[in-house]
Every structure is written in structure tokens, then in C-alpha cells.
Amino acid sequence: MTNIRDVARLSGYSVSTVSRVINQKNYVSAATRAAIQKVVDELDYVPNDVARDLSRGKTFNVGVVLPHSDHPYFTQLIHGITTAAFAAKYHVVLLSSRYDADLELDYLEGLRRKAYDALIFTSHGLPLPRLARYRKYGSIVVCEHPHDSGIPAAYAHRRTTYREALAYLKQHGYQNIGLMLSRPIAVSATSQATADAYQAVFGQRPAAAICATDVITLADGQRAATDFIKRGFQFDAILANSDDIAIGITRAYQQAGRPVPFLIGQEHQLSGEVAHLPTIDHYFNTVGENALQLAISGATTNVAIDSTFIEKQ
Image (cartoon, rainbow, N blue to C red):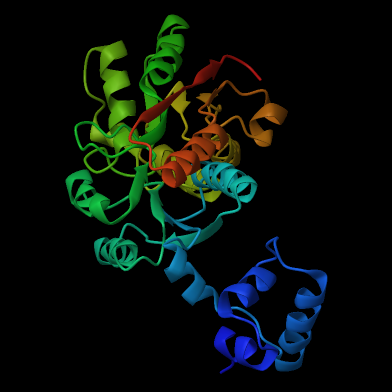
């Protein structure tokens, strides 16, 4: 395999001069540049990116660990991350995890082996202290409140707007309220925040029976609502975990010939605008942009983005 030393030997110039030409640096005469370029073209030589990354100590790759991309939380985060990465001339490597702890450990070991300059965990199955152990090998950023883990974080303030949304329901006379959650309360920071807000507004933890879990897509919302109907729940309102999911809930009640409960969505999606749904906007694009900046800068700060409860779109 041709290397830079071959180009230097055949052109008669030093490796450092050849390197300046290949990397388009200044301080090389036009004649020298032309002579070296002629040899480069004849040998069809291209630099070895892996070797170059090793020499400069950076890959310009940021690994983004995500369990799936079916929910707008993840798609909006990824959009923000990739937009900021493009502007900073970094590459984004998407690392699917499905909350598999072994896979997440593999990605952390990749950081240790310098396969990435940084890892962003949009969500995770491993506990925060376990992630924190790998910070000595490179930058790690999470997209949730980091508590006392010491991990830099970019995340949305959810608890305030969850309380606002549930208080809005209470103020308007809604008492029998169902909750749509992506994961069980015991393992999800987002679900915990929803349950905490429910307790703050209604004075008690939400019963397990009124919490539908594994609700990620519109079809999941329809399935969960159908299950509520079959089990005889008579909700007068449901807090959905996306606008699309609220549309799925609407379909289920319409198909069953039942009145549709009052619905609040999340993530300010087009479907919610068309249906004029109240929603919560967590500005996850902005969260993603800040997560990328933390990852590539190595900053150890936390960036919390305020959310907005929109009463009607």
C-alpha cells in the first residue's frame, strides 16, 4: 500500500513538504506543489484517515447512543445534534442500543479505544454512575438531569410543564386522567417526572392501572387506548407522550364509538397543530445542539432548556 514516504521518495522532497502539499498548507512554492502533486496522481495516493486521526489525537467522530428513533424525542434530538455537528465539521455515528446494557458497554469501550472523541447518551439502560466511570477516556454527555453523577448534561426542564399540563386538567374539572409513557416509571427519568408531577397536582402517585407503558408510536397510542376501553376505564382526559400518540388515541375511541377524552400531547408536532391539541414543547432540537457542543468542547457544565406548555395549538 502506497504511503506518504513513497511519495516523498519518488518526488525527491521531504515527508514534511509532501504533507504540507497533501493537506493544502502554505509555504510551498507552486513548482514544488506541482511536482509533488504529479507523483500523488501517478500513485493514486490518498492519506490514511485512521493514521491521520491517530497522529492528531482526534477522530472528529461523536457517537450518539439511542435506543430507537420511533419517538419524536429521539428524532428531534438527532436533528439538533447532526445540525450542530455539521457546522462544527464533526461526524455523527448513530449507535443503536435498545437499552441493552452489554451494547452500551461496547460503545463505552469504543470510547476507551478512541473510536470516538465523545459519546452522547440520548437515553440509557446502564445507571449513570456506570457511565461516569468512562469519563476518563473521553467526553460523555447525557440528555437528562445528571443528578450527582458529575456527567455533563443537556436536557429539557420537564417537571414544571408536566405540572402545568396536569394542573390545567384539574382546573378544568378533569379528574379521571390516563397517562401514556414510553417506559415504566421505575426505569425512566421521564416517566418518573410525569408521575412526580401527577402526585404534586393530585396528591397521590398515579395507579399502575392508569399508566400505559411501551407507548412510542401512533399505533402504540391506538393500541393502549383500545386496551383502556376494553378494561372499562372511563377517562375524561389523557396526557399523551406525543401529539402523534394523541392522534392514535383519538382513532381508538372513534373506532369504538366512544367519546374521545380531552387530550394533551407533547413535542409540538404537525399532527397536533392540525388537530389543535394542547401540547408541551420541550425544544429537543435545541437540547441536541447543546449536547453536541458539550461533547466536542469537553465542558463539564449542564445546560437545562425551559419547556413550554401550549394550551392550544
